[in-house]
Length: 360
Image (cartoon, rainbow, N blue to C red; front, side, top):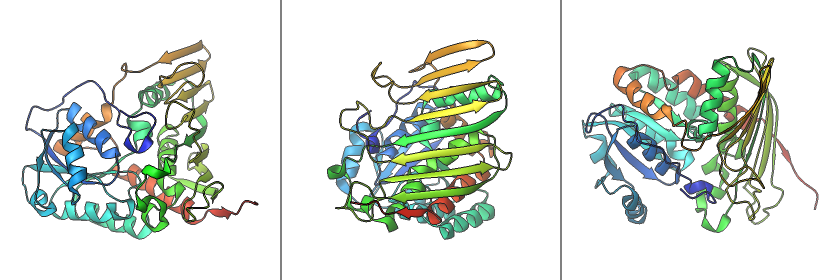
């Protein structure tokens, strides 16, 4: 786990298998983003068997095998797709190529689990919607800032238990460290990464829908800009948006690439959730100037105040639930409607964003 490098940040949890060895086999295909490591950590800790790895770049495969030596190297993507034992394809392709990989996986009868953002265009989203309707297969998304953060997991449980009453408003902050010299070329091309709201903003919109129990929402306003990176003119290093859910819950979020080098983690990600009877604050990755460990949750309600330090105490139930959903054809981990709605809203917010041109 590299806490200073968000692209290669891969949380590790305690093994909690929901299936036995060989009962649920999956493959890792397309290793363009380091989130594939977190995705595979979560699945293997939940008991899934990582059978194959494939990427056209042998260096990426070699690095992957250093972490997951149990995987066999496939000679081609087709070899993986044609293996009837493989139930799910996990992929972290270049964002603009994620949909195409998912369509190929579903054409071969596999469920699909992709890194966020799942799409870079609304046309890709429509293709995926049609394919899931035709096949009944899953197009699931690794929204890691909720699914792979223990404080976020507990926040969801507290909200469902009624600890803060009815949710009224959610504010999210998703700063990231740019680390430009270590980024691949595609990262700086908008056609490939989709824009900052489409990319890291997708985490924020998914959390809003989940914590706010929203089935749908409207994007009221969004804006993006390049404030500090003139060498990369297609990079948006700042973005924000305001939304309102179909149940009246409101949302504001901000994302950026301005994490300073002095911060011990790749970003001081935070979420504030206001309810009618209390509020929750999440300090996900660091409690700045207090302690370097993240997963800090602060709760205030009618009963009093609580501080929870949650590293290693909550776990990551999504991955086991996803495996069982694939086996049982259920939707406990995440509904397909929810995954696609989060994607749709981030694409709309990105498409309609006002572009700010800061003065010199």
